[in-house]
Amino acid sequence: MIQLFLPLNFLGFVYREIRRALTDLENMLGLLSRKPAIADNPNATVLNVQQGTVQFHQVQFGYQPNRPILKGLSFEVPAGSKVAIVGASGAGKSTLARLLYRFYPLNNGRITVDGQDISNVTLDSLRQAIAIVPQDTVLFNSSIRDNIQYGNPDASATEVDQAIKLAHLRSFIDSLPQGDATLVGERGLKVSGGEKQRIAIARAILKKSPILVFDEATSALDSSSEQAILHAMREVARNHTSLVIAHRLSTITDADNIIVLKDGMLAEQGNHQQLIAREGEYARMWQLQQQQQT
Ligand code: ATP
Image (cartoon, rainbow, N blue to C red; front, top):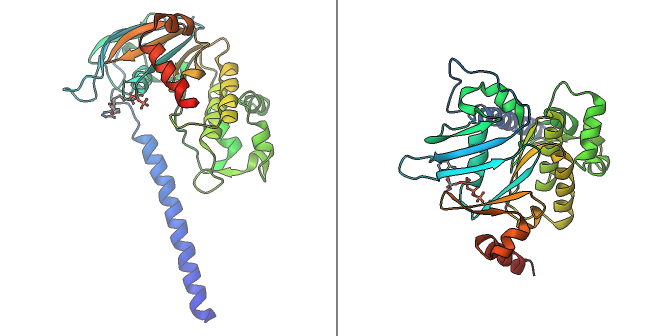
């Protein structure tokens, strides 16, 4: 019996190793395939960020030619402020982040950072200036510390520890069997959506970019996880220009300006109090979300 079992056991081991290798390859290809659809123009200059003001000027964009998503959208994220984008599912909120990171060329209009058209600067310099906290973070098959350090491979051990603290990850990491050496990703510990977002926040803290884009996870988080993320976000947003793509209005009531996106256009804007008083689209969405919570 054992003569039969050993080779089968070995075959099982080989099968599992091949599957793991394929998962790594898949992750890598996934990242490579996120290469931009546009390359640097030959005269591209290095983006020079002094203040960190972001402006969308009459931006028109669609993934397909006959299906416009943004139909001439203009707004400003003044340097150092927090601007939130809200709107129904599919309104084009995440698309704004992809356009700012230059994954796609615009059909019309301009996006500028401190007055420089992002299509005229090198992609490297643009992406160095912007840290994105995505909805769903990719974790590599490595330790949780390596996964955080990925935000800036040159960061010192003290800086990584500081980022862990600011991103409210310390107690989570301390509860793991091997602390920050614990393996995460496909081969290691599965990490919850909220913990993943905090890892992404720690990466963003290490990257030290002047502009921060936070794409809030769509899936509902339990309230303690949401609070931890909110606190972490406030730490990282300090002294940064931040654009928050929000799904839950309760997370952006402190924003300096809230942009309501509807039918590819700016429907209304203002701070939370102003938009509630306006009794328009935002007030309606707020009421709906309040009802859902009760
Ligand atoms: P949600 O709140 O659900 O995250 P959203 O407002 O962020 O939605 P986007 O993800 O920006 O919406 O998508 C806007 C529209 O563009 C949607 O109708 C979506 O189906 C479409 N879309 C998004 N990505 C692509 C793509 N790669 N190719 C084609 N269409 C896409």
